[in-house]
Image: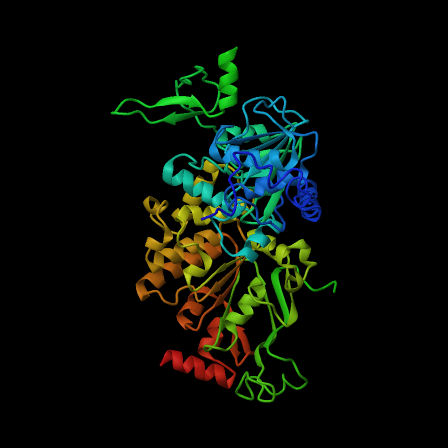
Length: 294
Length: 284
């Protein structure tokens, strides 16, 4: 009874780092170059979904493989990476993705926005100010904003090519008629640079105004759907809404963070037990912690 | 090319033709009303329509009559751009001053042209409407395509159009699938009028409706054609529809126009042998 391999603890040194078989940032140079070419295309045509050869990653498709590939393709030796999941640096998926990036590159990690250069995220844009030294990488599950109104890929391509978004407007009209308000929360459709409608999945409406005329570059990666798209700095980003139906972000009236008592950050509710009222906490845990330390 | 559009005609169609299958020498001579078939026996090609010429003025409705398969709907769909034509020249005085042949527009330009110039009312409302969308939403579609971005403005316009087409306003926010056939057709007409088109193409607008409902829809169409000074083409195999809506009509047989006449005159005194057969069958 002998074991074939001995588990050597928590670090991954045995498979990465010094081993010349594993390249810097996991992907081979040709793959990274191909992804960077797609990203350049995406930055040149803001909001346009660029197909790319999504690689097999050591995470399942749909678990951030698109964002991960972007991060690995653009990361350099002096970058500092922050990875969050639901605004939380300590989420399981965030920890795993960050560990993969750090161990395959040897770069520094941080939970502070101000220290980071690449911020990979699912669901949120950090509350802290981001400037032109930051690149935001978003993991996107469904990159096609028109998926809900059309399934035929050729028709979708035609609608984007001709900027024929009337059916998107009809779906907003129908939503307002049926529900009295526009109910779409995450992934609110936005017109980028006056041309392409994009899905802003998975961020909430709360974060949408942050994308408009931002100082930072935002890169969207959908690994399963094999698409990347981008919102370059200082780009016009308009949420689709009727002139007389103002775009509104999520509101939790009177709610404050249980930990830092903030009411000006994006709050998430934890259900109460035994019929008690739920409590609210900041979705951005690093921001919340910094506020408490002040 | 300078005198293509006669000042008072909104639409001018010349030499319109559609052939399915290979186009070979002599195919035209081997098909048509005088031969009694639209199928070229040498190649199997179908000459669905050939050498169709007519003009329509503002406020005028032109009828196209003929039996099933005679090419009526083919002509209509070629003009609308739903199918590509094989030959011909179609000009709309209100589109780029009549300087563009509608048949040679690329798909994107044709779609833009259809937004506020040409509307089609199909026999089957499912073709012209999204059945899973409310009546108001179906009208919002062409309005938003034309750049309307005011929710209450769109609602008011939809209400106005549904009122004119006699759709009960309390059904405005119900999905069209829940509507009866006659009411769906009224919604389709309301949608067709949304952006004040200059030309409306009606393809068997009342076929499939029962007689009393059809009469109501016909009344409505006649009133709207007059009120908006629309140019219209009405395709129907039903002479009562043609008689009620049109002043002038053409008769098609095996893909060719065999008679071009005033509607009254055609019904009283048809000239072409096929027209005579058609009229006598309808009047029997």
